[in-house]
Image 1 (cartoon, rainbow, N blue to C red):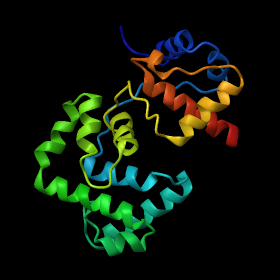
Image 2: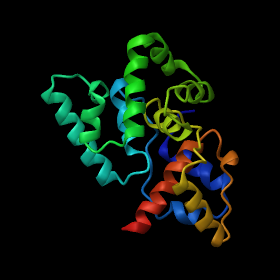
Image 3: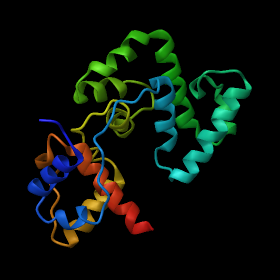
Image 4: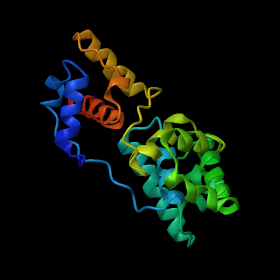
Length: 197
């Protein structure tokens, strides 16, 4: 059976009692799609976005892209550390981005293998890169490789959303949402975004 936005939503309604009231207020999420962007471009952007607002991270990414273009570089991962810092990237994130570039150069076949890995194996392998934690690896798996059954519980926004719903006697149990835990996470993020508007 083909996965559709409706079948995902119905699964979440069936497995998360009380969550239907939240889902009714949110636009449907289309099934995740495999990205065509090379990992060497996608992963540095995810690293930059960590712990930053969308607006702040977009500004830094734009600066980095312009800096890379001005130097004739294919990716922001190839920017020198000083250039990354000048664009507003923290020293820790700059080190993580440089580790991605090093990994791509020294073990390209390993990065190529990420596309065929299970979620667990992918997260485990990506977190072996210096400065990259489970959150970054999970976001790469979900939004780059379209893994549908991941729930990055270390994400502070997801914990906040679960806590808010618990206060309304809606108990989110991510394990029950399998094989669509990624969509549960997405809808919880959407819930918080809608509340901010």
